Length: 496
View 1 (cartoon, helix red, strand yellow):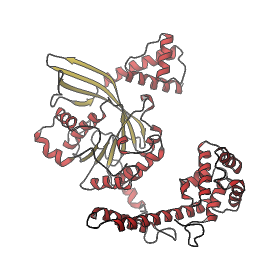
View 2: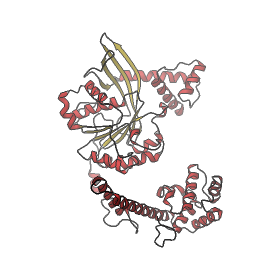
View 3: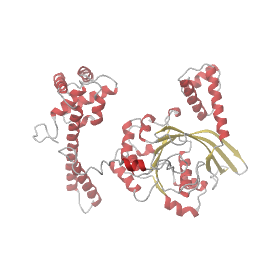
View 4: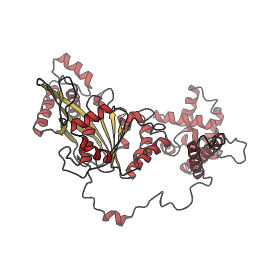
């Protein structure tokens, strides 16, 4: 790496000091600087990395980032010496007072960091290529060569890349845009997602997300009606599965009615990849994302499924960066290709709070659908067990607002008593509206009774159960029903 004594050093002392000084002298500037410089290691000087890290931590705590606050933070964390001491902190602060355009200075810092990283990658690639035996590792050499070219393309000492920018920054033609007919919504079968949309389907581990999705796919690839929708053109599906065994997949498809006569359509329209081994996490590895997109581009696709999405990512699920990086590497390229995706996900420990990391997960998809089971009955004959499960598919977040916000679904299946599911005897259908209305009325009865008895506002499931027991108020015993009561109660209390 370049040293501070190097006359050709790839960093700018004045720009780094000006950016940090501005953060300590201008109110509310940190979010704007952070949008350009996301992490401390973009700064070349280690002292500046320590100072910027302190500024970001203070901003995350909604604390001021002035010189006194930063000095106090560094002193409390015993890192003031690493930041150059109090005198240097004052020097940096003074540079901010003289700064002109802080965003421009921040871009200078980022440009130098990008160039340093590119040079480092180039040097590392060259070392690795020299160490390779060309006869033993042609694939590795090819990969390193591609990385070398990519790093060389990214190296931009002068700043913005030269040449025609129309491909990278396509300009909207307003005449063509307003001549386009948007009156028809391009629904995929079932009318719960449009072509090219990115969707999350969330539910607990026992609700049957994969079963529902597989039945929907079976109907969609064969042109059968789904969820009360009209018949639509068959679609092509690519499914990445790290959850289900071969037995699960085949027996479920058989239960939906697939037979040997359907092998041709399955082979043509349903590309199923079992336990795929990507070269890293899809949200963290460009190589892994490129592998996925290469498979996508092998043939026409309408929908890509990730089952279950937590198996394909790294990092904290409640961290926005985890999902924003997944969007950048996977969802954005799919969306630009006009290809929809459905990622299956689990609820967190508390079902009423939705999916794990839900606050971070909703910003990178067009819709979030939550699938819950609220009733299940079993009937028996001498040889057959019939299972009827009532499901609710609720849209909790939407970017467009188009279409229905809730589907009431009944899953009906028959199996041998103590044995396998019977072929062609399992299906998902829209629940009779009368039954759905009756269920909603039962939930509302519980809510009305709780309000009449003076239940305090803001209770979650556990506190509500405790309060109800103390006050001898009845609640549904079914956990799914109880979650619905909690949600309906909160809505009623918030609107009061």
